[in-house]
Amino acid sequence: MTILNFTNNAASTLAAGVGPSATTIVLATGTGALFPANNFKMTLLNASNQAINEIVFVNSVTGDTLNVVRAQEGTTALTWNAGDLAQLLVTAGGLRAFVQSDQLQASTYTSATAGGSANSLTATLTSGLTTLPNNLSFFILAEAANTGAATLTLTLGSNVQPAYSIVKYGNVALAAGDIPAAGYPIQLVFSTAYNAFVMTNPATGSVGSLSGGGTNTIVYQSSTGVTSYVSPGPNAAGEVLEWNGSNFTWANISGAVASFNGRTGIVIPQAGDYTAAQVGAVSLSSTTGSNQQLSNPGYQVLPGGVIIQWGSISGATSPGTITFPKAFPNACFMVIGGNTLERNSVTSSVFNWTQTSFGFDQTGYLSWIAIGY
Image 1 (cartoon, rainbow, N blue to C red):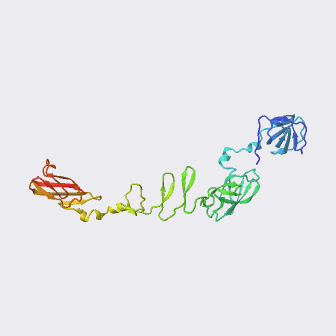
Image 2 (tube, helix red, strand yellow):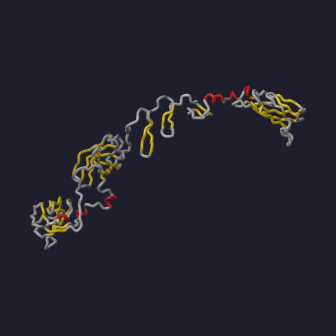
Image 3 (cartoon, rainbow, N blue to C red):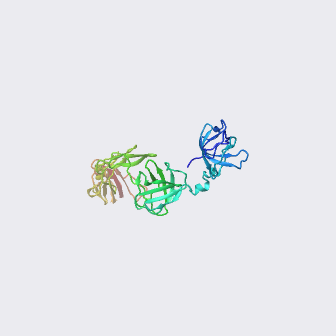
């Protein structure tokens, strides 16, 4: 299809007469510049009777000389005389070259219903084109679900084009079911790079590989619109992916404990963490057995060596001495005691504590607690 060109108020007269078979028209001197350089409709009119007219198509303008195709839009090639009129007027054919809003919304020029067979489709688009331009975009309603690679033979108006393959992203041939059913709207773009029709909405998508990277590398979005790789891949079993503050790396976690506080799986050591030996030392056996006496008197050895001891007696005779149920190996920090049956009794009843005992001057009921290591 030829794209029509226009200028405003382009009008002239013939510099010389032309016969019905002439394909060259010469305008009055200097008026050729009033018209477009090529591809426009011009109307010839009899200077005495403008009801007599002929529409021509102007291929090109050189100075004041026009190369034309005669008898357009149902008019007849006539004999014209010098002084007859030559004007760029609105014609029905020129107006029909414009797409109207209803035609645009109805996809009059960009849709068709496929014929042929499931894998060898045919279709015709309303068009004045004679060849397929790059990026021609249109859609067709499928004839049937495809069962494998497919082709399309497209006719542009009356111009039959060669059969081209229908491919998807990466110039990959269609797989069975990419056209899922009859009536499916197939969106196509002709690519001169692929020399094929690219289907932009295949039902099963595309499968391919990204360039770059290596064995076992992972793809991630490093920034907006940028794809990167975690490279190289892991070097040993048990390595885990770790963010170091600027990028992803593979971390070797050999020596990490296999569980912690009821959570199973690899635990990645961090600065300040307890070591595996320290974590293992905090076990049930380290706080029970000889490290625990849940009685009166009694004691509890805590992880790290702190010992808490306690007890209570009735009928205490002042002054007296109480021996700890477990001697503090290093020191007794403090002892607190008193008659817990009397609200105002505090710690004044205990004194002189050592690693093994303490003294008291309480008479009657005495409760105490000691802390050391």
